[in-house]
Length: 370
Ligand code: EPS
Image 1: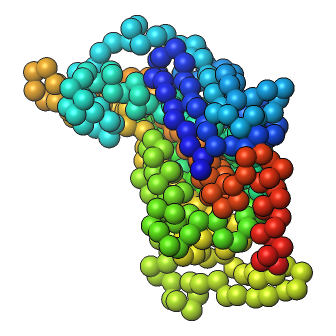
Image 2: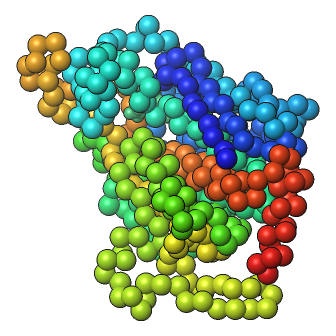
């Protein structure tokens, strides 16, 4: 239902996206989009590029008098940094980056590959996600993201959606615990000192989800599969898990599932959320709870062994300005990515060319399952 394409290079003139499939009549709030863009630029351990850029969204189509018209929405962010002709070619591919496979496959230089592979592209994905968050809010669906691990520093406490919203405020690493934040900062400082980089895990939650988004009938329609694919497409992500996730392996079946209850006011509900809000590829009505793990950034000051693609001789990999830790930024990007996937599944189920129609369809469904 909902689709988007991004275009642009890290040192190109613009990052752009066309988002298609949103109904007419949705109010566009540029402040909300810009706020998400600015959050993505922050976080302890970010690289020098963020001091140059001040990402701001421009809408280039599909919005009239502050509201969507139903036409494709054009989004644009202008890059401020030097242009692609002013940055050098690379010959020593960085292990862990797209450099080697990309250069061979496309018969191009490393520069041509890394410019598009760069996580700079996530700026425009955050803008797309923020627009879909505006859509979801109209149906009382809300999103939140926070960092649960950086290096060995791990946040283990159980927290509610509201606690995350409140307690992550003011954190330099988007963590809800000040104690764990200190340990996370120490992990990043250690990596800086050792000319190294550090990865971690973020968690995304969505609440207010109706039962039945996604479907069990076809593998491509499964909601968890769609969210996992989208999160995996984010630069650096190497693992995605829902609910108990990898802990399912050691949990007995009697404690791995969510028992079913009924209340005349609430309808069917679960007291636990071990499934992370999705079973059989469909939303259960509980919060969607998904975690993504990012590998450490692959551009290292302490260069790894590589091969010079001109001479085929062993040399140290090239170094480019980069981040030491991008997990806090990842938690903002992940939130946008999950929002898009939920909005897509929502529109697939309820459709509508205008917000009035989508709302009517949604209310009809809620009555049906009450
Ligand atoms: C990024 C912009 C990039 C990198 C980083 C993310 O800018 P530059 O290459 O000019 O420093 O800082 O990208 C990577 C770490 C990567 O490996 O691609 C951004 O805006 O998020």
